[in-house]
Length: 426
Ligand code: GUN
Ligand code: FE
Image 1 (cartoon, protein in one colour):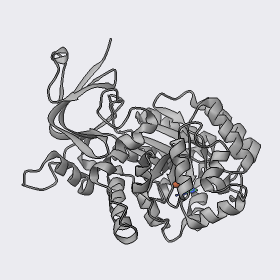
Image 2 (cartoon, protein in one colour):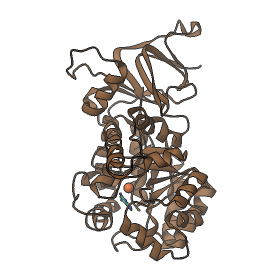
Image 3 (tube, helix red, strand yellow):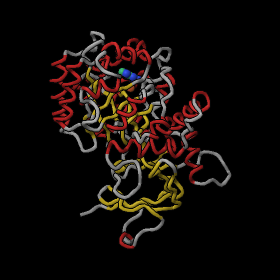
Image 4 (cartoon, protein in one colour):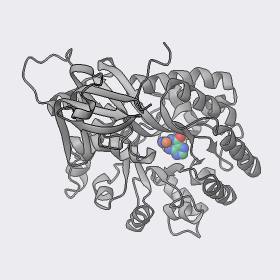
């Protein structure tokens, strides 16, 4: 038996970056969790089906966070006085070491998963820690919650404190065991190979992870070109490689399987060529880039090269889980790039940033982040009536205002792959 779901309300989504599609009091029809129709009236074939009517509420796609560190959740809003490398040493690594204890992991990951739910992040691409058991706990909690995610057990075998480092061979063995154990999850929760970044992974480890990614056909995530100190360090560790991007490329960590790289702020033109050629996704993390004084990513330039782009909270380099706020920050930062740095970088429009936070990042998951035919039905129902304004507004204006001044209290329902997702903590 096919299951049919029909949602009615004020529909807004982006099928391409340049404009919103806006359907007042329209219908989304999903059969077996996949959208078959989105438009103004119900086609006759579905006339007898039950309709869930959300009245004057907005219906938008669920948000996609393409880069966050679940184990850094308790550090959000702390330790913002340093740049990347001392920040990692001082705040991040000591916190991540605590995840050798699966009970601590369960406590923190439970709260983090609930915060994703609260903020309407229906899909996410997450770093765990080097600990395989705790990483499996995160996957279990996401699966139980009904949220979709790629989750990575992190690999680190050099330049790391003795309380958060692996031996090369053991790291590969643990990764294989963790990949095998992850098969119990799915289809919404899946593994992703996660070398932390070049400075914390030896060549031997990176090559081994590239082989595992191909063998298991799983995607890859890492960090790339975030901070000048980091970039100089990579150049001194890898004098044989022409640039930071090609260190990953030469270790078969880019271009073999779908890959997402966080930040990509200071890429040279040849590195941008490589990103375009390999169709590596950039996860743009504006709050993190501001907090850690990392820089302003050249998003307009990357867009012009057709490089796939998603947005990331980068908890806890970034302090905000809400992708609504991450996308408005991406717009703000792009305006600063335009006015302060280079007038050829036109600021991001609302529809462009919204696209990145939905369909752009959603590409990593297949057909996700839009209400076009064939997409998995991920949706948020937004009741914005408590945001005071006695004036008539268009649907786009109502969405813009909710993105800027609204919050999770206005999200009254969340759907992932055609199913309502209740509060994971009851
Ligand atoms: N580079 C390597 N590790 C990290 C991390 O945890 N956060 C950020 N923002 N950059 C990194
Ligand atoms: Fe990060």
